[in-house]
Length: 335
Ligand SMILES: Cc1cc2nc3c(=O)[nH]c(=O)nc-3n(C[C@H](O)[C@H](O)[C@H](O)COP(=O)(O)OP(=O)(O)OC[C@H]3O[C@@H](n4cnc5c(N)ncnc54)[C@H](O)[C@@H]3O)c2cc1C
Image (tube, rainbow, N blue to C red; front, side, top):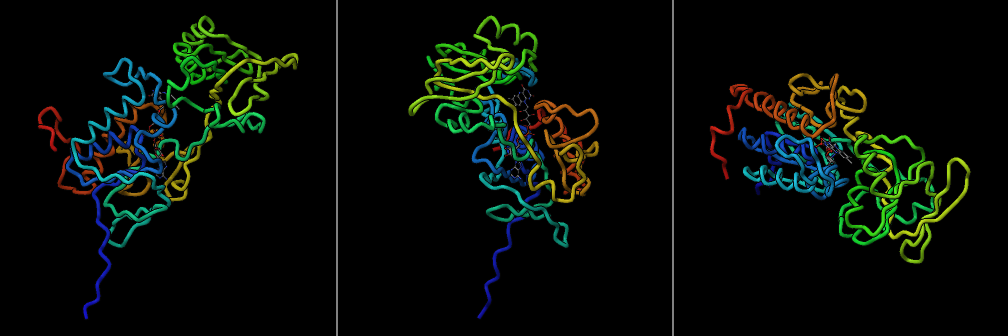
């Protein structure tokens, strides 16, 4: 009787951890380099922070797109990526990274195991969660009218909205929602905003701004009806009639399991060389999770890093290849 060996797991050339904009662009680029590629993400959809946190916001600083909504940028990335075949594993969180004796890298997720010649980590902020009010009288309204971002603009049509915070997100959302909502109030605990000056000037003209106030309670039956605010100067309380609260209080993030993979870290990110290679040969990083002196965390920067990482990974995988792939304009797109 012949013993049936378990089928060896398929080995990929490049496995990308993180399907945010940078991981998606890296997947396109890996296809362009003819690498057999896999893309893994713990979320159930492509797009990373952009889709999870600000799909409806306009982005103005991606080359070639003077004004593009987050979800539209991700749609374009998906279209670009689909020129080549990428194996996609969504809803899987990468837990560990180990190396076999032949150099193959094993990525163990909470659901399965993936084998790869090289790995590109595009894990962004890692595991990120929105900062809460830390006040049960407010936080209990989560998903009953209280959200930490806007995923569907129409949910705010003709609604009375209270936006809370003083950063770019709060100011931009207040301006954005003002177009469709019945009324928008922006509540901020000081009069110092961490947002573009131009947007701050506009928001004072467009919406009702309550500086030096915090939200202390939310009232209603099944839906939000009133938001109670308190002056940080006098302690006086007042109420705002409202149907929705958008909390823009920032995010808490940590690299999650990736921090324990033995890679040299810096400021919660992965230290990389000019080839975007980590301290472990064959393991690259790009996007928000890659760290080097003078690094700005921007989508456009991450795209460049993805191209550098993939081109160098291509040579790591097959040393007969060259780092410079030639111009895409000289090659027809492949199906
Ligand atoms: C409100 C807001 C507005 C912004 N506006 C702009 C802007 O106008 N212009 C600009 O350039 N940038 C902007 N940014 C920043 C921009 O979104 C980030 O720089 C960009 O998303 C980084 O892309 P990324 O692919 O590196 O990471 P992310 O988009 O964070 O994607 C990383 C992905 O990795 C996954 N992941 C992490 N760890 C694991 C794991 N262990 N296993 C599996 N998957 C994992 C995550 O689930 C996530 O999907 C903004 C950010 C925010 C929050």
